[in-house]
Length: 428
Picture 1 (cartoon, rainbow, N blue to C red):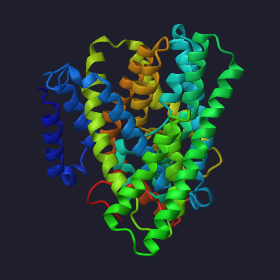
Picture 2 (cartoon, rainbow, N blue to C red):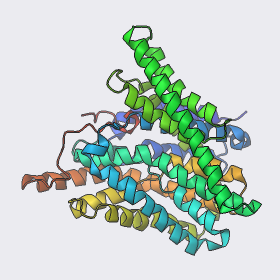
Picture 3 (cartoon, rainbow, N blue to C red):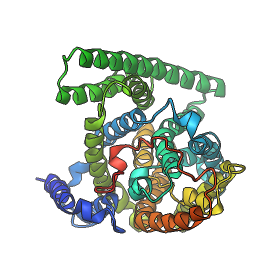
Picture 4 (tube, one colour):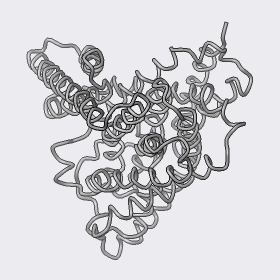
C-alpha cells in the first residue's frame, strides 16, 4: 500500500505547526509541498506508489482548479475595482493579451516543430498568475494597497480569461489534426463559452439570491452557509460539462456573480471554499512535485529552461511595462508588478489535464515547459516574496515621505484578497 496519504497528512501537520513563523521568511508553503513531493515521488523515495498517476490525480487537479477559480472570483469586489483601481484593468486588458502574444512568438521560434497552435497553448497556459506563490506580496501592509490590490485582482481574474485563449488554441490544435476549419473551431468554442456563461451566471445568481433570502429569515446555519456557497460553484461546473460547456469558466462566473449578489448581505460566505481551496492547492502542489515535476527533471533541455526563464522575466515584465505606460507609476513599482507574476496551479491543471488528456501532438513538450516554468516560479517567487515586499516597502516609505505619487498612494479601497493569500499574522 502506498505511503502517499501518510506523507501528505504529515506535511500538513508539520507546516501547520510553523505556518505563522514561516510567513515572514523566504520559505513558503508551495515550496515545501513541491520539494517534499519530488522527494517522495518516483524520482525520489517512491513512497507515493505508481497508482498516484492514475485518473485520481486528474480529478484532484480539476476539482482544485474549479474550487479555486470559484473562490477567487467570489472575493473580487466587482462593483469597485473597475472604478477605483486602474492597475488591475491595465494588467488584465493590456498586460495579459501582450503576455500571450509575446509568449506565443517566443514559443513559435523555440518550439516551432510542434505547431503554431501548440505554441499558442504554451503561451496561454503560462499567462495566468498565482498570488498564492508570493503571498507576502499581497498581504504585507507595507506594500501600497493599490499595488497589492492590482496583483490580487489580476490573479483572481486572469485564470478565467486565460482559459478562453487556451480553449481557442486547443480547439485549433485538435481541429488541425481532424481537418476542421477555423470557422468550425470558433463556432464550437463560442458554444462552449455560451453554455458556460449561461450556466455560471444563472446558478451563481439563483444560488446567491437564495442564500441571502434564507439568511435574512434565519433559516441557514453558519456551517451550511459555507457549504451551500461551495456547492454553488460545484453545481455550475457539474451542469456545464455535460451540456457541452467549460466547467472551469462556469465555476469562475458563478463565483463572480455569487460574490456580487452576497457581498453586502453575507459575511465570510466564501470562507469555507477558501479553506478547502488552500488544502487542495497544497495537496496539488505536492502531487505536482511527485507525479509531474520529479519524473521530467532528468530529461529537460536548455530550450525548456530558457523559455521558462523568459516567461517569468522578459515576457512578463515587458507586458506589464507596456500596460503601465501613462499610469504614473514609478519604475520601481512597475518592476515590482512585473516580477511578481508567479505561475502556479492554473498552469499545472491546464497543462496536465486539459492538454495532455486531449492527445494532441506535442502535448509532452507543452506539459514539460509548463511544469518547469511553474517549478522555477514556486522557488524563485517564493524565496523573494517576503524579502522583495519588505524592500519595496522600505522604498515606498522613503518615496512617500517626499509626497506620494498618485497611483501608489493608498486610495482606501478594499483589496479583498482571498484569505488563502494572507500570510498568518499579517492581517491588516
